[in-house]
Structures are given as C-alpha cells and as structure tokens.
Image (cartoon, rainbow, N blue to C red; front, side, top):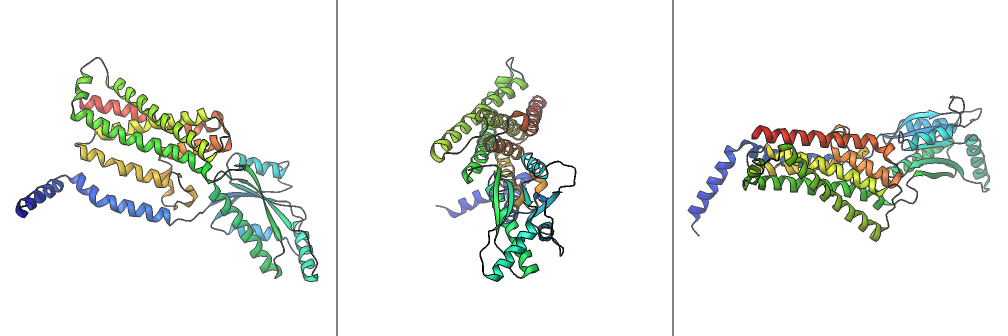
Length: 386
C-alpha cells in the first residue's frame, strides 16, 4: 500500500467535508447535542408530580398532624400540591371530587386524611409509650398507577413526609399505613407502561428512516422525476407514500402488541384498534416529516443527518422510557413539540386507563394536524423543486 496515495484520499475527503458547512456543523454539534440530552435526561430526578389533598382531619387542641404533613408535602421538590379539598369547600363529597381530579389526569394522586387522623396518631403514640399494641393509622392515596415510577415516587414521598413530621413533632413515629388505591393501572406492571411507548417509538423510527432513504433513492434513481411526468400530482405522490408507510407502522405496532400480549400478558383496558389507529396517524405524519426534510437536503449524506436530530430528542424527551416529570425543567417544553409525546400518551391512556376516542381526541387532533402539515409542506416542496 502506498501511504502517499492513501493520504491524498484522506486530504480529498477532509477538503470535501470542509466545504460542506452543514456536514461540518453536524459533525461538531451532534456529539454536543447527544451528551447534553443524555446527561440531563439520565441525570434527571422526578419533580413536580401533581397531587391533591383531601384533609378531613378535625385535629386536636394542640394542632393538626395532617396540616403539618400537608405543609411538608407542599415544600417537597418531588410532588406539587395543586389543590386541597375539605368538608367546607362546596364540592359535595371531597373524596369523590379529588378522585375525579385523578381520573381526569389533572393530578397523579389524591392523598386523603380521615376525620380522626390526629386523634388516632396521638392514641397510637400513647399506646407505644405504654407498650401496648395499636392499629396502624391509615392514610389513603388514590393514585393513577399507569406509570409505575411516578406511583412509587408519590407513595415514597407521602411516607417520608408522614414519618418526618411525626418524629419531629412527637419524637415518635407511630405506625401509619399508606394505603394505595389505584384509580388507573390496577394490576399494571412496568411492561404495561413500556409497551405503548415502544409501539410509538418503533413506528416513528422505522417510518422516518425508511421514508428518508426511500425518497433519496427515488431522487438518485430519477424515478421521482419520471413519476411526476405522469398524471400523478405531487400531492398524490406524497399521499401514496404516506398511506404506505402508515400501514408499515400499523403492521409493526400490531406485531409488538400481539407479542407483548402473548409473551408478557400485558393488559389492554381500551380498544386495541384505537391504539393502532393512533400509531397509523403518527406513521403518516412521520413519513411526511421524513419526506419534507430529505427533499430539502442537497445530498444523500445531508438527508441522513436528519435522523439523529429527530430521533434522539424523541427517544429521550417524549416519555417513552421514563416519565416527563423526570425531564429537567429547562428541556421539558421541548416535549410539547415532539409528536411522539402525544402518541405515547394517547396509547397509554387507551391501553392502561381504558379511555376511548372521546378522551384522547386532544392528542389525536395534534397528531392529525402534524400529519396534515408535513404532507402539505412535502407536496409544496416537491412542486417548488419541480
């Protein structure tokens, strides 16, 4: 091997990269983007989990143990108390109103303190000092357990607040039983939370990659030019591609769904067809996005560069593997602009919560708007290039 000739090829390749500013920027900025996203996402802790409180405690002449615990929860970084229900707030049954808040997903949990909570705590402390047994004092947590990580974090934070307050105020920690009552996710395991996310992620990844590669191939082989010389319009060409890749996403999701049901016995509380329809719309929109981006690339290599720029934020910030509450506050608004976020949320709501079309229409509307926008812009881009 002639080292001089090899170095000449090296020089030619580096010179080509130097003149391609987009590629040069990609090579420098992409590692920075990856380490930033991975570092902040994996290093993030659960924060700002919304909960509500039902405080029915009558307290004692010396104060209220439940009020002290609520104050401790309000000061927590893990949970955020968004609302407190009581017997005199005009809500009728406070517990029913709080549970309905969880059922509407306006809060992840409702923490309920009974009417005699403080009295029972004091009685339990006296029994402990006298060396006599006493029944555990209950604190009921009505919780949306569709996300196991969030459910565990809420229960742990409630237990921590209860124990900390009672030790600080009374010098003893009587047995307080944090009773979990699941509003959603009864019997759900991590695989039930994981499967809908994998369905959406697989559909997006494969559809996006294949659409970019296919369109680049259409351009390089000049089949696109020949197709557009026929009566087929740009819009019809894009729509045909979109329907095809939508079905590809549909087949992938069906395979994942059937495999998860057979191998891991995942539960599906709602309509499996509705979940697949959500994935279909996501696949159509993702295909349109791939088509649009690749049509504006000057070369095949530039088209491929869009893959990590779209996929990495979607994987890390759409709530596929961990809750959005663990995403740092600085990055959390980005999740609102990622279509996969809405698809995963809608699929989980259908499959675990048992929601129907009337419940997931906001997420589905966003996905339909995303698909319509990307397909329209793709057709316009093709027409402009032509």
